Image 1: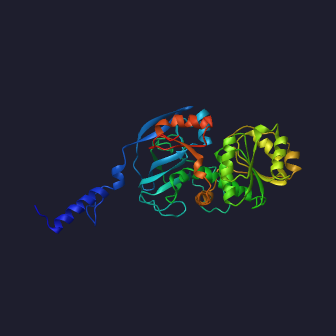
Image 2 (image 1 turned 30 degrees about the horizontal axis):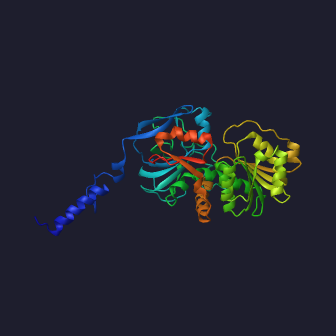
Image 3 (image 1 turned 45 degrees about the vertical axis):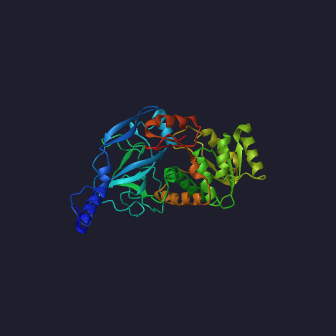
Length: 410
């Protein structure tokens, strides 16, 4: 049977309608949305149900309200804070859906969602990261000149369980509620997006350090602790143009990676007996000088006690290693602070502005050839999240990521 041109066009239009999920050129107003058609009824969520044990559970995907966003998770890193919660539930959240270093693709959003927290437009299909859920605090804004940090806000991945359940990024879908802060990061690749949250911690720390007026282009800098936080600190400093950086750690592999990220030299503390000997080692590496500035990234009270010995008179210190109560540190206020006139700043989490700045840091680090994305050493599927945490606790990798749909990558 032969068909005329109009019949051919009608068939093509019908096929396109079926593929796109909406009518072409003003067809049926009741046609389903393409994104809706691909969304399952149930989501898989890794729930921490007891210390050191996740169960992957199924929960219904809720209706998306006018101000909400449903995101298909593409990946999430395991943070040191996650590891603390995994081991002993210090926040009293069990059962809880963890994961706050996550990113994914918008699959559905409410009619009121037009742009992200920086004013950038968003649409279905865009890639996003979340920052915080604020508690109606009018003092916290995107470009707050007081640079208030977000310590008083909630974060996806550390929310008490509720009737939604899709509260953390260790899942295949996450439900972003109205009032949350989020950013469109479609111009970054997946591994870079997974690193945004920890990198924001270091962008904030370096901004805090700069506020002392001591950290400068030609400063001699010590970074103590070469886990992911310390290594990212080195990369941020290197991207800023600071070239005289000594990395301090006891793991030769991590010290080698510190050199690739910008450390000019290193001190392996296992080769020294005591802080005074380490200070002499640092002084030798700096050509007879102590550090102008130091970043303490270990989360160890002993590490904090030692760090003052590595800093010159009139120097500066940024302490950023403690995201939970790690215990007391012993210092001598006279010798460690007063007599040396050390300027100290603390750093915890970040501001919204730091989060936005982090996107440019990642692009700059990639542009100058820093292997920042190689921080992600291992990738596990959601079904093997308990193994991912075991790997994290064994400290045989750097950044461990959970990729819901991935094949095993280790």
